[in-house]
Image (cartoon, rainbow, N blue to C red; front, side, top):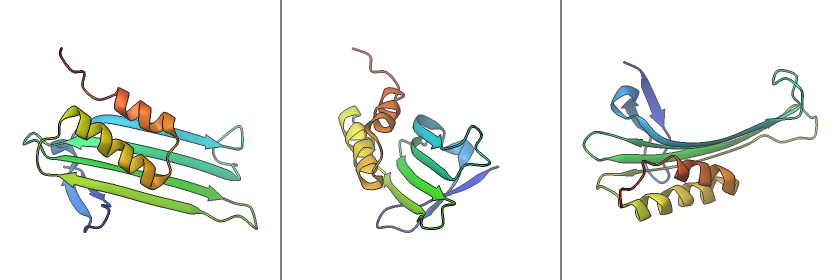
Length: 123
């Protein structure tokens, strides 16, 4: 079993068994100022993930992390996350992803990538 602790907004962190909470959607942006990640002076990583338990509970969470090696630079880390105990409609799920994106100041491409990875609707 692999455990993961997820930071939530305005609630205590939750600890899950990853295998019981598969990722159903994920948006990611990574950038750095060097050819390789190791010598980078500035690194940016933005992640938004949606995990759903078999019983319908859903966790939507994300983080924005900017690290710098510059003398006058400042590292920035923002986290947001929400646990939903009731099943979410597709519209509610998308609003929740956008809410997390807004709270961590994610670029819209990360939010859209996460939304586009949601399971497709049958119409």
